[in-house]
Image (tube, rainbow, N blue to C red; front, side, top):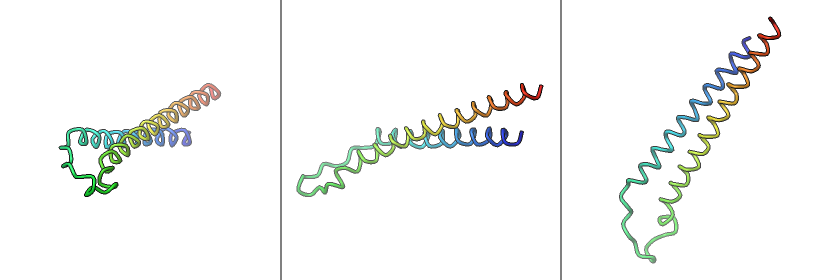
Length: 94
């Protein structure tokens, strides 16, 4: 039974980790949406890195959002599988 308990714990922990990642990414995306636009620079003065900073940060946050989604889904599948295994064990024992 201890194996099943640790599987439940691991699943719940993974769901919570995914949720934290989603919350953080969503906060960053919302912050980027309401941030003041950067001052306009001339093409000569602007480096490629400075022009790409905002979109890169936004795309990193969007990727983190998707990673968090998958992490939470994996945790949910783990909990579901642990539940099914526990049900099978109880059915077998009874």
